[in-house]
Image (cartoon, rainbow, N blue to C red; front, side, top):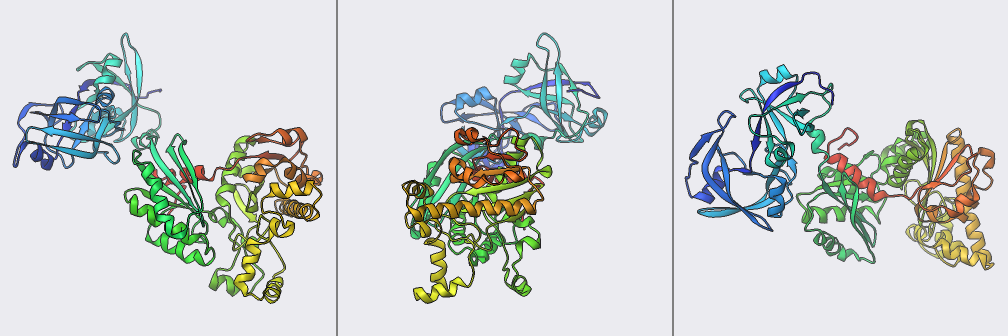
Length: 585
């Protein structure tokens, strides 16, 4: 790292030690006990006390750990990485006083012992600066710098924290492990290298610390979950619990939490189907957010109440975890009124919120981000058509990183033909269904939601694989269901080609979109006039993420497996880090 103010700082090697609160001091040494000073330390007002304690971990213990005075508001233990292995604890590397979600330990004194739920850290290497020294070196509090170690082990240590206070005395603190590895001893000197910019801060380093995010996707009769380690995005565990009755949800979700008692789950990220116009991004959940989710249950009566139940169960059993809501509708809130309004009396939108909201937004957003990497173009330069084809089906026109239009409407019933949903129909059919079936509006909507689509036309199944198998056997209704399914997809792509004034890429995702080359071929056939040319072999042999279009195709066609849970985990983690991309209402 290039420095603009290289200057020398003396070294102080820091051995394992403990800072005690007065309350904990008395628990260990007796009521009213006061520390006895053994010697002053270099920093003003700090001293090594005569007293020592024993640290007890899950694997071992360390005796004669020195207490440093004076007492503090909160007890803090500072050890080395070698100490952590001996004790069987996993402390984070932190600044002094930054103890949230740090490691636990038991401390034994002559008159008693205490167990800390958190408080053990490995102190980040740091330099104490007085305000005058900081001005001389050109650094600010919490800024990160580097130090150069000269001699036979010449090296540069990065990520050195600057601590600035008017009473501090200039000194570089490093623990015994790092001092031994670097060949440093007390009263040696290192040279400080200050970066040209001030972008490297303790906050930036802190953000890289390991955090666990549990993603919950509570459906009408199922719970899908994944546990991620962030920021590495490592998937630790996942499962899919099915056939859950309403009165079994709490015990089902609690059973998930019980599996991960050994993990510090900092965040729980929930999928919420309908967020209306209120939520344009993922948000940290508070009472107002829950109230809005409940209000939108009128548009998603099968989903939002269950989503809200999952949130409340998580708050009950993981009260210290941050709860985050991710909305299926959020990505589509960039649509212009010409896309989301229906040609109804305008007051219906103003008074009752009747408009298109769109769904599968988490999936469309994820594959958009992957597409920019595959195509090596930023999203603000791309026009994309994203085809989410699973049991539910939707297509979204994406212009320069934003949803311009989407096929689903105020509810997921609108748009394309699906497994059991009809998609768009003439509204005049609904009262006629009521009449011939001797049912009410709710009954008619249930038919459109659960007995239509592939199932209704084929009479065979809602699973496209079953329908295709029967179609190959010559079953006419299955052939018709398949043709209607793919024709409507083909038609919507044509519509969005016009809306986008051309397109750079088409994405296929979700169960059918990712795994059915025959359906992809049927959808794209006839779009050659618009520059969509599939490579038959690439389409047939594709596994996972990749291009299936001809190298000569002006429009790139891609298969991108969706990963809604990963983007939910990422959003939650970004909120945790308080980045500008996140919001609350």
